[in-house]
Image (tube, chains in turn green, brown):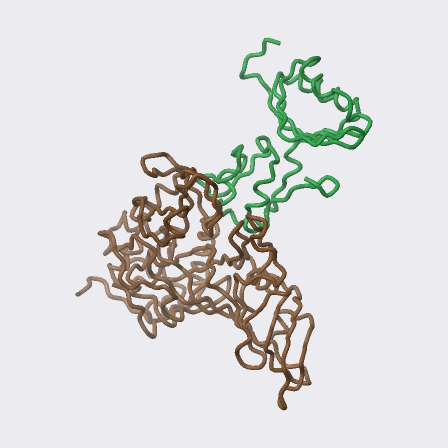
Length: 147
Length: 388
């Protein structure tokens, strides 16, 4: 796996574990079996209950695809994290207040157009923008009513 | 002082009515004055339209909800559980934009979310939604009713005006936090050790930067207010008539303010937005556009102001502001803020806006269109607002 750094693929995904899968060490197989690096951004895993985890995966594109297929084969739900945070474009007034607290700079102000841009590829779904946005234009998709 | 170019508001209005007036936005005027010089620009341009779209807490709605027999003299009034001031005539009341519902958790769990308040009631009404009116009274011979509770819409109201005791701040602080913990202010969340600097105003588009001595804006000036028509009622609360100014006449601190009033029924919710400021409270952001008649070359010069000419004071909101310390950490230009980064105590700091520049420009452009189409005529102030 001597992929040069520039060919590295990086993606933040949100995983849901059914109760029967939550006891198995499946995520570490991303590294052991598929040669991917991952870092856990957020996790809520309870044995014998449904679990959720937000992880950032880095590695070659093909290994990423295999790793995701592997997780899906084991009944783990995989959702790109950006789909968990959404912006109501009719409501956003492009003030820019959210950009101060966005930890990954997924929300940024375009200096030229003066519009607030949302890059869903870099969003880690921390939910900070949903608290800060003064017009509540940022929404987080809730899983069973919890974040 | 004599001017080379002399125009009157009446002359400009005649040109507007004929569809011949030359109207530019304040952003377009910057380049025009630079290219033509102030005298030629004053000859060619009749009106410059400004625009701003910022939260301003000193806002509210004055309303009359009409009688429903048996009559009532409301002593306590709430809309969607948000209290309104009812110490007026029988069914008159005033609801402040920052007023919060009786059961709001406030900052008990800090930072509070402040999801609903007076400003939200105003926005809901403007969107055509019904709100719950609740009134309590003690009963008199002429007004026997004790309670009234019903759904009410903006159309049901006999009268509804936005009445903002203070708006259009001329210049404002750039807020930083020099303490070691995050703070939540009306200028937004400020990270510790000045890791972000939050700034407001619309810079070269902002009304009072384009008429820094309020030579054309006064009591009675007709304006674009929240998508409808409004009027300047004179100086706003906290108006400072004698600020320190730079060599261009631009105040270098928060100074001039305007009091505004406009018929809410003619406004558009796109330009009247309730805002919830984390850990602080509720406020109202609205679009205000003021047309500036180019009566002479001085007005061309003033409206030619650019972002680089505007200096704003940097203030510490961690310690200084809450303790009433007036210390400024230095001046930065609006152009520097707009670039996304300023220097605070020699350190590069991300600059974060609170004013929507996109919406400010939209307001200036809308007002320009209305004047070009002959739908909006200018007014001469009935009384000047002191500014020197």
